[in-house]
Image (tube, rainbow over all chains, first blue to last red; front, side, top):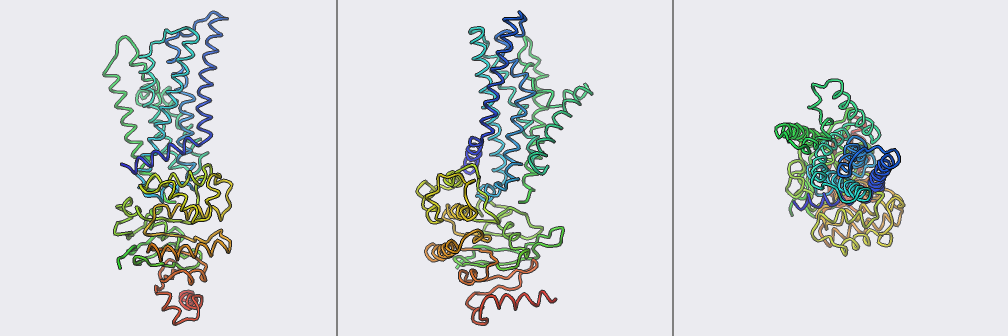
Amino acid sequence: MSTLRAAYLNELYKLSKKKKITVALLLAVFAVAAASLIIYGVNSFAGIRITGSSEFSVLVLTVLSYTLLPLFTAFVCIAMFSGEFADNTIKSTLTGPAPRIKVFTAKVLAIATFIIADLLLIMLVSVAASVLLNGWTVRMLRVLISYAAAFFPLLIFALLVIAISNTVKGPTGAFMLSVLVFLTFIGLGFAFPGVKSFMFTSNFDWYRLLLGSYINFSKVLRVFLILSGYGIMLFGLGYYLFDKKEF
Amino acid sequence: MGTAVVIDNISKIYQNNRGVKNLSLEINDGEIFGFLGPNGAGKTTAMKIMVGLMRPDGGDVKINGFSVLSDYENAMKRVGCIIESVTPFAYLTAYENMKLRARYYAGADDARIDTCLAEAGILKYKREKVKNYSLGMKQRIGLALAMLSNPKILILDEPLNGLDVEGMVEMRNLILRLSRENKTTFFISSHLIHDIELTCDKIGLLYDGRLLSVDSTENILKNYSSLENYYLSEVEPSVNS
């Protein structure tokens, strides 16, 4: 356990020292601020009400769930796997006393921590923007549920990018293939509505199932099980590929 | 005297038919073992298998009694290594790189980090980012990282790469001192025959992936005027066959 803890702290430390991570977090804040200004402008000057203050945070999450959040998540995953393979720093990590399963798990935990931090930051900024624009009318429980639930599909996407990073040579190739797979999954969802519910990319906004006045628990459970299935398979695949890799 | 490293019939063949073939070897506690061989003989492949960077096609390696394949954590607990080029994280300082490794070891506090950096000769640059370091300085960080856990075994692949003459002498003296004072076992590969002769007390000759011979430096120098002559006499029959 102490080895896994040390490996996790190391991955977090490396992540915190990467400039592109800071830039990604700042961009997320900027995106929320820009969105709130646009909504305020449209509301004040055109008289069109896009969203109420309590829905603003959820709207921001819905937009970012399909754009910046997966993009930043992919950046981090690729930096922690493909990036380290490319500059050979992975050798420094793997010749320590931590076995590969612990190094892999530590990296996944660090990526999960980054996703949580990213979501938390966006939630705080969007709530603050709502309060500034409309006063304290935010329904915090709805916002909390939405952001907490949004973590799960993003983690599944991260595991997919990790598996790709362990397959494709070079960070650029891994990034391009990740984007392609992401778009293909979304495209398949649109082209074949029958399989849409099985695509994890169609469930980035699954938190909406929990926000209505009536909650269909069997549907929530089905989505949860589908996402869990993806998670288990992709974690297994990612570790298998990482374990087989030679340096 | 116990056995520090047991290499048990490992093989690893690449697509070009090069690699390591049925390599078996035992290194005793406290020995300084020199792994000699020309470029492409399989030295680095064997050492990568020893530290888990590669998996062999067959065979096993035991370090301090633990299999690297099935009990990596215990096998590598008291092992330090430099394999091929040293690649620390360029966006971190030397101290931060050391701190990453220190988290794994209970006794590796800031004082221990400073001691290792001082022994490697880069203490005064510890707050500088590694991206500004020369090849020799990176090699020295590699050595400091390898020494951090106060290891019982040091596996060093071409440790003199990138070092100037002064650095080579310092490295040689450090190896001899650690062996004398701490009874550290060394497994060193090099193509610099003279340095192997001056440093190692047991020598293994690898050629075309096969171990040609293992003998003590003392014995070799009893029968040959230099290690170079011994090397050529052992290798030439293989070249001709």
